[in-house]
Length: 264
Image (cartoon, rainbow, N blue to C red):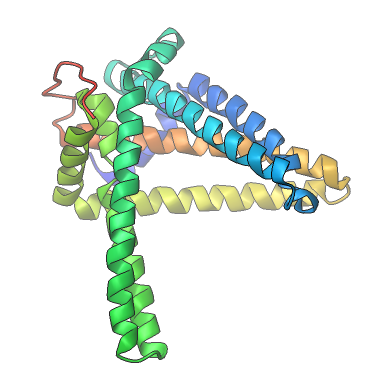
């Protein structure tokens, strides 16, 4: 499967996964509306608001993992069988919860390691001379490494669902697949990123024009709802595109499906 075919499939199959989009939309609307009063600059120094913000962020993160598992399970069903059942959403959310959570913990550890290495290398380069050349070199190095790491870490979450394996095994397999198909994976990532940016900019411009004559409060609510819609639709397109491409790397189907495990 080519990267443009994967993008096309992302849009076509998402039209059949609007149930998943609606679930994410409801979640994002709730998060967005709750966040509005918490983001008020006048309350930024209030200890109670800070505590509520931290607790709500953790809660939303844990709920999102469940929704991610449910969504990925239905996306796999849609790609593999051409249909999906919302009745399976909760089951998939529970089935993949611990593995996705474990994978995210591994991502955090990888990110910390990468940041530490980049900090040491950057400090060493700047010791040679703090000038435009070394600063540019550091900026380029950080950008290249960041893009490379993100590209290598795209597939593990799809490997968990498609191959039904644990987080560590998925991390190894996902990185191996991305490394073996680095250019095409990076190309797909860039195309999807550009598409999402264009869509966001166009919708943002239109919403900005519409909300100009409205009150600040009403404008914030409308923007939060529209953002929720965009942040629900685009991620599902990306899920379908990346999972379709990953499955094509496996020979067109999740071959080698192993017994379910909760290994972390």
